[in-house]
Amino acid sequence: MKIVDLRGFIWEENEHLKRIKNRGEILAEEYEKVVKEIIEEVKKRGDEALVEFTNKFDKANIKKPSELEIPYSQLKKAYETIPSDLRDALEFAASRIEKFHKKQLENSFTTYEEDGIILGQKVEPLERVGVYVPGGKAQYPSTVLMNVIPAKVAGVEEIVMVSPNPNPPTLAAAFIAGVDRVLE
Image 1 (tube, helix red, strand yellow):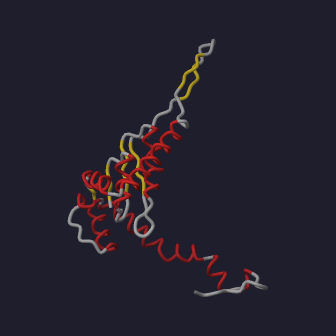
Image 2: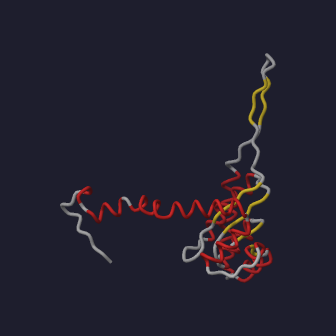
Image 3: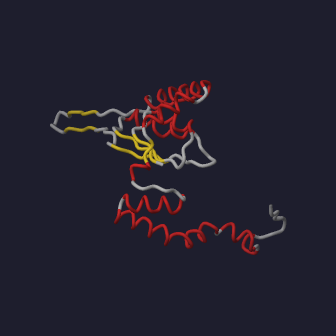
């Protein structure tokens, strides 16, 4: 670990601090072109490009897009096989999150004024939403609950979750929250 003594240094004069301060810009320059090319390929070739990039970057051996979807049966199995104290904690958290978000619901209304003017508000949920849940070393089942349950409470019809290499607690949370599809 590199230790930098900041006593007496001015940001603009310290090269190490300049590099830290500007690292986002440096990374953007380095990767922006590649990311744009990937997005364009996925727009052009759809799932074919998605499979190609998954194999390339994740060192996977996916043959067809359907292999990226985790079957619902795996969500249910994860729910049934995680430790009961964890399952109880996820269920408890889910009920608290749902209770809170139900209080936030807005309602449609219409008001008729005497001069024939109609005023109102129409509240409609989105038909479909996608949620991203981090995978790898930082997997938080709570992220699933806190993203999916509010959408369910709002009335979203279909929720698709994307998570690279989700662990059993994350899949169990997806089961509890009512995710419709999970993609790796």
